Length: 361
Image (cartoon, rainbow, N blue to C red; front, side):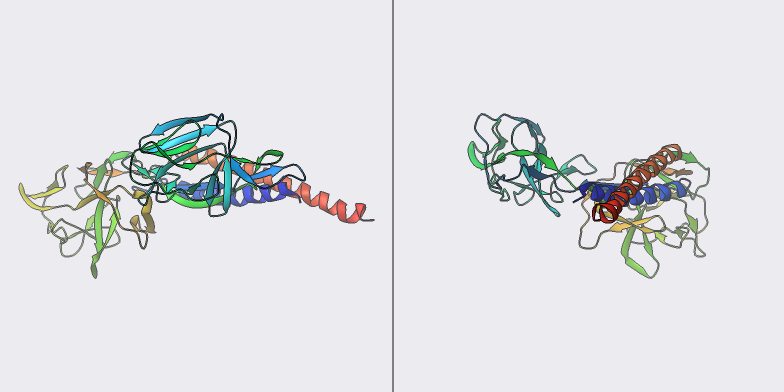
């Protein structure tokens, strides 16, 4: 009853979270090396709707149904005008006309995304279901999908993707959208020259490694290169974290004039004193903000290091990757979306009130 009410409320809830993220981005537009927050939303499962007295049974679609197949590296993108593909989500099974999937490490077909290097990652995705509603696990071999929706390994069919619900199916419908997660946009911010030898910026992808004075074994990562010196002459962050070296120690310059090369070598009086520990990761999406411009990996997840290919620039600071005008426009659009949803809720409230007070009499 009143499905539109659920759509409106879910839109309002999601818009509120998006508005909070946009406001936080605006507040940090001048924070050194700040990376803007993104709100990832997902639609509720697309459920099949049918006329009254329709049946629920499913069966593979007929052989003459055409499926458009585009191979995307190790993944596939499919769409069709007839039948449906099924995807298992955390909220239930969703029926769609188009899907994109790739095998994960165990061979299960799942929706995918791309990591920082552009490689396909499927381990976080939703499972693809076959025509009988089962997860599809493919053996090792040459994976293909033909234009009838058949999954082939070395030329042998292992699963059928397309399904045709029996009965007078009208189409699909969902109940709005919900917040899935917050993500961080690690794109490069603008580089501003400061002429301060203790200011360092990273051009390209990568992070400085820092650690607490009393916990040198626990590493944190940052792109905020606004460093200073402590009383002992070590390079530290504004909050007192030591800047780490490849030797597992702090960077000691003892107040002397020093230079940092683009490769991260620390030179004192023209001689190499130390080497900054510069890191980069393929699984940037597993990094979590913990405050003070620091990041660390989500508990239970391991870093996937890749070679650091950026450059360290001395006398520069990286600005926030936030465009204040874009964020302002987004906030205005979100407010309009929220207000539209609230008007729908008020309308439903009036309809329900009339149904109770007038139709009931």
